[in-house]
Image (cartoon, rainbow over all chains, first blue to last red; front, side, top):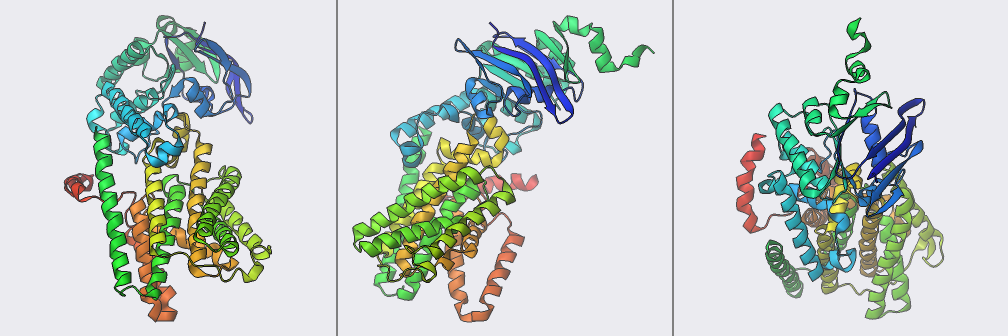
Length: 261
Length: 324
């Protein structure tokens, strides 16, 4: 049974239909790519999946812990709690906070002590839990070799590491499904290659399902098992990387119809 | 282990500061250096610290711009005044403070739920409106004495009580900031969309911060009533909210030690300028403009006062930030 099922999803902003009648199904453990020209509606689709927007029509079904439920239109923090985490296209770290705090904040929904008495009186339960948070955050930071920078402010990290930190932060919410919005944007080929490896490793080590938006075709073709192509809000094609590479409609959408004219 | 060690160190430092400040002021009072006139300034400082620390949680840490703090202060003040007028014992005084704080919290939640959907300027104006509503109610209800206010409120506040409540407020807010729930609030200030995407119920924590801020405003108001004998609705106008906000902004949004320092500095300046009667407010304003021009992030920015053991690290880091 699919982990995530999207049924006839549509989102209109006034007269503009940004996402139109989209269907998707993502199986557990898959690494799926979502590509499409600029303005195709990829990020809008992400925003629908994570609750930033409410769909005009259609359903989003999530199947974790053996039960399937509708999650469309729920608040983002609830959807995060249900097991979908994301990164942002334009980095949205907590810039003025330390690297460690960025990760610990994402762990908040699983914190065991309460506001009273734990948070106000720093009970033994608080101390134990804070130690666990710190340890687990450092373990996650280790994936991207960021542990030694844990006390630096997020805004002082180099660009590539900020992107890594966004992924670590999303991982800290313990997701079943990870949505990556252009994780390699602005990276050089070497950095992209390293990121490709790490994403594959993340999936192996954590049993994650990943859906990623990406413009860098070398990354998409290398890591994704299946690809969805969006154009003008509609699902243009889906299939294996090889099929997509040779799909006439996709080539037209990316390169323009007049290619042979 | 690191967390435990840090806690141990912080507890020791807090104890030294608390006992030291208590002993110093107590000695000055007993030695006659601080007379009854300066004791009023002392009380003002303590009350302002409590108010500012609470508002800092709302405005500085959670990033929600509120101009209604005086409204919650008024609730605390009137609640405590009414109770101590009926029951003029220490038990009545403590009950009054508790009632004032709880009542202010309830109003904080009630006002927070509708207004905290708003952002920035809109939120500021909405909170200002609610504070005015509270003031107007105080002006027209019989239980609050109408426009004449309440007189002859028994005085219980002295240095030990003020000291205890000030320390309690600082310790509790500081503890909250350094918890996961406090970090959730700070995340809202940093980036509300990202915070919500990371599983934080932003509405809940905004209302919570607002309610905690109101709780301490209630305590501050209750102590105010007990210190100054009389309450008038005009005391809790728009300017009072601005006064508190000024302490927070001057001290640095998101710095508790900043709020404490600013509360002391502003009170001392006001007292020192007392002899320049007409020029006083002008000088005060000029000083504020100057501080905002030369140090817009406030005295402390979002840092806390560094401990002696941290001085070395800060000096080492400075060349780096200068090179940026």
